[in-house]
Length: 155
Image 1 (spheres, helix red, strand yellow):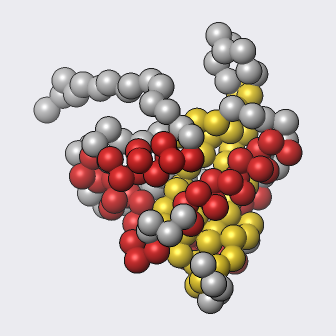
Image 2 (image 1 turned 60 degrees about the horizontal axis):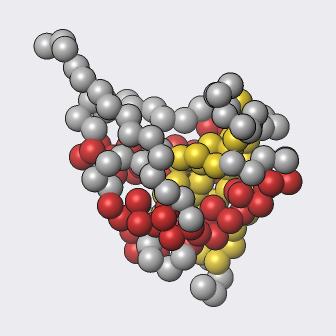
């Protein structure tokens, strides 16, 4: 795509990233009725943008941010062969730019950075029923692994 740029997010991008975070929340609300109706916060953007174990990238078209994602190096469960993995999150592409391969470009950038850190195992969360997102991740090579189950016994 012409005029597309994938780059590391900067602190000055934080204000717009907060807008995109709310778009992620809105997109996921149909899949989880327990998300707060107002004031839901998913990410500690300041930490993600400044710590050494995370990389946030943005996709820009004509200097306008149209997508984002992050990788964060995390400790893995002791039962696994690998001691660390990269968790991918904040995957969002503006609706008018979906289906153009931008999500894959973002994920490739995040995975390349993670491999430079010596990390080769990747995880992400996606809501059951979010078939479009599941297909997008499967195109990159992800496969379903663990199903989270929940119950609410309160009022």
